[in-house]
Image 1: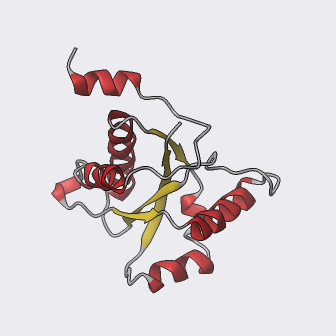
Image 2: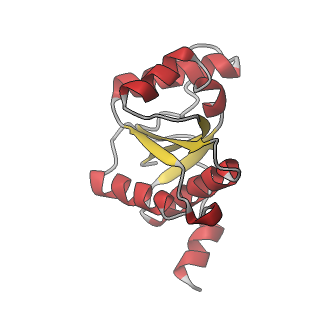
Image 3: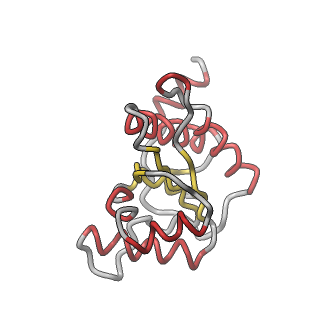
Length: 156
């Protein structure tokens, strides 16, 4: 069977990750795969923020947990040490679809590298708050971006 089709058929969401950070080269390949996703008019407007800093990752987890209404001891990223935040520029009429394709490419890429992944929602609600809009500003990201999702990645 073709390796791409095999990866598409075999990839599953992982809900228990090891604390060990995946190799930087693997994380970069996942980002690259996401950036090569198809997009409306070939605009490639979605962006990816790689969160590998544990403190920031944990802050994001707390915010996501609060939005989800869970007990503060729950980790909505299931212990994944790396979280990719996919955001898309709302000025493009296909932004939601474009960002979703980025997420799909990243999850299949992670699987192909022997890593687990899972799509975690609530990025939209997070990036509607002042705290997370400030993060975008601090990173020099300008524009009207909507959070599409989090791609939690790690060894399992």
